[in-house]
Length: 128
Length: 230
Image (cartoon, rainbow over all chains, first blue to last red; front, side, top):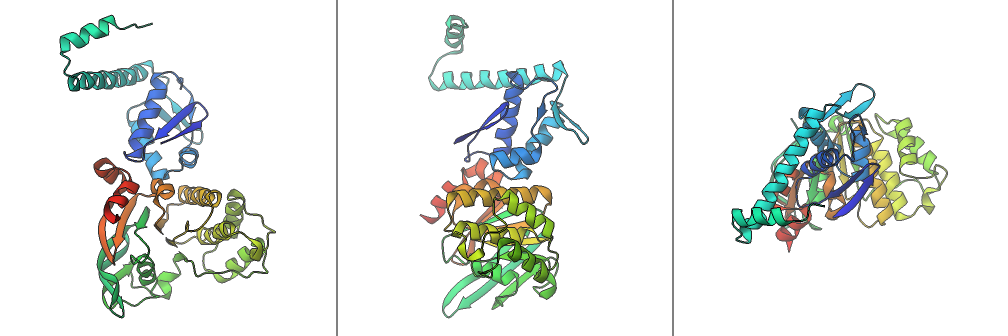
């Protein structure tokens, strides 16, 4: 695994999993964390393919999915931008939080921790 | 749509079968990796596509025809056999290619040479192996043709040149969606370039499919390759 920095974005690609999903996930993450702000321009398809050294088709698949989610908007001749819709951004935060919660749940399950005990652990965890 | 279709392609050299009833379709507008150890039949496969090798049995269809001078006019072929005049400069080699190859875009060749950091006034004879490989690729990619056959474009060259070659390929593919077929046994650097892949051994396809689906199912191409050939 190799870390690649492209301005506001940092990507880590794992060749043992589908690459387009990783590109998608990491851009969503950057929006949810506010590394990418509403209205920010994201790299062109070609630039990102070039920087990540991956097939432009792979980037296109991720970009199409972002567009379908309404998380990005393409303005003809100008490029692709993060949506200014707060609703869409909070949707993606919810989606990623849900995924993180599921991961936590699965980790607890493998350890044989009950739901009740897991919730107690969450209550007791330091949040700040 | 398939750019190339091989059906039960068979070619023997003496008792050695270089292609052994090989069946494979290579989709148009995508980058396909042909992966396999030395002697697997990769080069023979390419030669069958351009009609340089005549099959003993089976068939090959290329760009909706049989291999001929006509289909070859739409194919750019990179092999380890090709050489450029040693006394030429890079610029002269590009001019020469423009004179001999159909559909050659000189402007594009110059852009690619700049992009891949190859000096115009360098003498071909003095180029390193990696630089020579870059020149060969530039001349291949500068042709506005439907099909690119790149036989081992990465083998035996330094890391920097390999990276430049990969960047050149991405640049070219982003610009126009040609069908690109790349054979290699150096998978790690190249595997993120492929849409499709075919693993070949002893003249046969042992595994083929869409790369992202194979990653989902079995992991990286490198690990699949190890599993198949070790």
